[in-house]
Each structure stands twice: as C-alpha cells, then as structure tokens.
Image 1 (tube, rainbow, N blue to C red):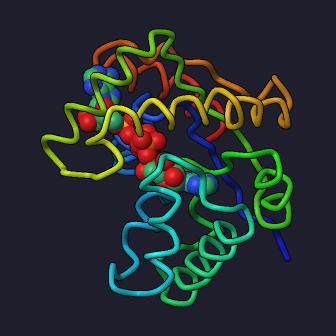
Image 2 (image 1 turned 90 degrees about the horizontal axis):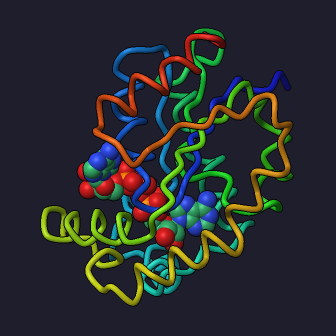
Length: 195
Ligand code: B4P
C-alpha cells in the first residue's frame, strides 16, 4: 500500500491544535482529522463510547491499539465514501500520535512530511484557555481543573517525548502563546515549504 502523505500538528492540550488545524484545512488541500473529535463523534450510548469516556473523562490517554483501530477504520470509511483522496490531499493529524507506540503503529499508513509543533511555555495560559472553552463548549474534560492539569501532566510525561521519534529537520516550531492569526501566519511559513 502507498503511504498517505501527512502533516502532524503537535502540542499540549490547549496549545491551539484544533483551532489552527480547522483554519489550515480551509486554505490548503488538507484533510483535518482530530482523534479527540473522532472519539467524541461515537454515539454516547454505545459501549465503545463509554469505554473511551472512562479514559478521556479522567484526563488519561485512550490505549494505543484502540486509538489506532478506531482511527484507521475512520480513514478507511472516508476513502470508501470519496471524502479523502490521498492523491490530492495530505492528512492533517491533530492529536495523533500521542505516544511513541502510536508513532510506530502509524508508520504502516502515513508518510510524515512535516510536523508543526505549537510551543506554549506557560502552563497557566493552557489551563486558562481550556477553562474558557469549558464555558463555551461544555466539554467535561475541560470543566474540571484537576483533569485539565492531569492532561497537561500526561502531555509532559508521555506525549512530548513522542516528538523524538521524528527527524528534527521536519519539525517546524511555532510560538503559540500569541494571537490566533499570528500563530496561523507562522504555521503557513512551514506548510508552504511542503505543499
Ligand atoms: P483533544 O480533543 O485533542 O483535546 P485537546 O488537546 O485539549 O484540544 P485541542 O488542542 O484541539 O484544543 P485547542 O488547543 O485548539 O483530546 C481530548 C482527549 O481525547 C485527550 O485528553 C485524550 O484523552 C483523548 N485522545 C485524543 N487523541 C488521543 C490519542 N492519539 N491517543 C490517546 N488518547 C487520545 O483549543 C483550546 C482552546 O484554546 C480553544 O477554546 C481555543 O479557542 C483557544 N485558543 C486556541 N488558540 C488560541 C490563541 N492563540 N489564543 C487564545 N486562545 C486560543
């Protein structure tokens, strides 16, 4: 199988991955896939959704095999329904991989062209953004500060190390503690080199 070309958007919870990926997919031939959104799209009454919630509601990562199985089934569905054409589009992966094991498993499917790394040094900025989103979107995992802080710890302890799996030449760092449009402009500087 020919691997799908992909750009990864990488950063702590609240760093702006979902926000920026939504903008980017409007202006470039990119198919935005957020693992968090895929999980949240599964009907809440299903057994699978309840299994996922047992992890996400505590700020923990969903197990690697389960994550990749759901993600790959989802992409297969998009190909079969002509919503993703790998010959014309790159995937824009938001929130995947989050562990080195996920990065290894993904090698089977994707050819990573670029990684956009959103840098926000101050944890309190992230906590503030997520608490604000809790008021707007009502996501349970944003509403409890203890859970938000646990997600940030999981990011520091596990997800941040995942970046080391990839060659540093393909990593484009962006200062993400800045207004949304400035962050977008800096991201586009990196993206235009590969598209
Ligand atoms: P996600 O849905 O990916 O949650 P997130 O990382 O918190 O959100 P995101 O990064 O998209 O939000 P953004 O900063 O754009 O994951 C939810 C859960 O699912 C995880 O905790 C985990 O349990 C599970 N999960 C997901 N992927 C997984 C995987 N691969 N393996 C295992 N488990 C997985 O936005 C945050 C807020 O900041 C928004 O309100 C936005 O408006 C604001 N904002 C963004 N940019 C800003 C800026 N420049 N200035 C001011 N505010 C800004």
